Length: 288
Ligand SMILES: C[S@@+](CC[C@H](N)C(=O)[O-])C[C@H]1O[C@@H](n2cnc3c(N)ncnc32)[C@H](O)[C@@H]1O
Image (tube, rainbow, N blue to C red; front, side, top):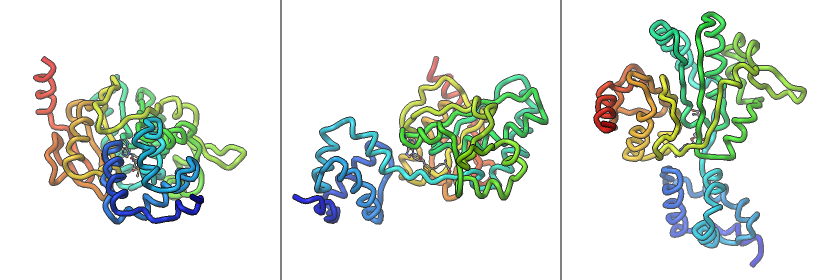
């Protein structure tokens, strides 16, 4: 067989088998329109492994557990950028945060960026919080970013950004951009050390029970639910709420909604929900 054999198309049968593996590993449901995309993403990996058909890649994946993380990196879509959906950042900065701070001045504000990708969302949170901290020095915050893909998290940890990742932020928030993002000699921008020291990244699959100790005051789970079917979205949200404080806020992405789902969240405003306190009673009941 020649290398060109990897150019053969992914047939329906193997596609369907791979769709199942994608779902098992990530919870993502790929529709039939994603066949070309899957083909294009798997081909370079197949060449690396000298596997000449999608069927042989499928067999390899089944028999080599260590291939799982590479597969996850390939099948996840990691698009993100600073200050995505400006109205949400305005809401966090001008309403959510001041309200929270007014009530709880002496505790740390804990926020979870629950599908952090390469870290742009977590770093945007950092600049907004640092700006707030300048006005209110007693304010303390911690940002936690998680994602299923180890590869994308390695970029989040480096925290170096340029081009499209920072374009909108630069334009909409020149104040925060100039104050808190600094260029290096290669033209890459990074957050100042004080912000970086308050952000931690960790791998986490949203379908698993959170293992972290922190109970969050605010969770951003944006542009990830869209990849899951309704019952899977419900599963994810039932895990996420285990790591939230009573009344904590939940922010979703622009193309997402919890309208038709059974969850413990109540609607506050478009894209913003709140963990209902009954869940806390339920949690207490479960724990006792
Ligand atoms: C499109 S990005 C969203 C990034 C950011 N939240 C934003 O809105 O700009 C979706 C991210 O979800 C992650 N993801 C997909 N399935 C996941 C799962 N089961 N658990 C955790 N993260 C997942 C992907 O790896 C990807 O980085």
